[in-house]
Amino acid sequence: MKRTNVVTAMSDDAPKPFKRLIKKLTIENLWLYVLRYMITKNEPIKAYEVVRYIRNTLPYKPATVTVYTVIYRLSREGLVNQVKTDGETLYKISEKGRKTFINAINFIRYILDLLGKDV
Image 1 (cartoon, one colour):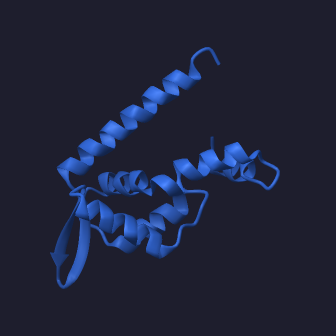
Image 2: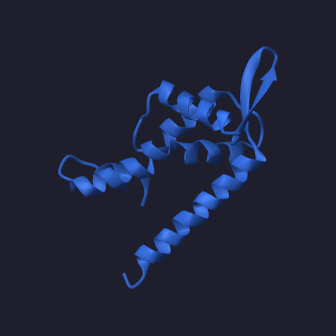
Image 3: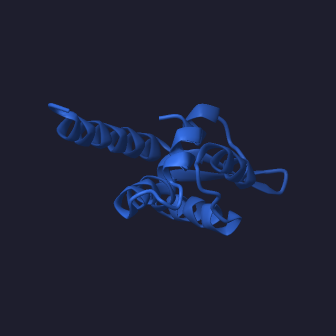
């Protein structure tokens, strides 16, 4: 489903369960989008770059502090490494983060296979 279709589907008359699903797969799982962007970049990046990416990718526009909080938590859990460069803190996905992301994507594929059978 294209982004424009998702935004249209989230209109005021969309069923509440569908709206909740979109929220849970986006805002409530921002960590997946953060790690995905870090995998794509494959170099240390500023937290604000991640904010811009997420705002341009998701149908929701999360607050900057929300994205920063996700990055800090990922760092505390060892899924993201902090890299200090010229007085700036940059972030890069760790090997543990990469493995966790792959496991999450495989789980999502498994769920999609379960839900998509005979449809």
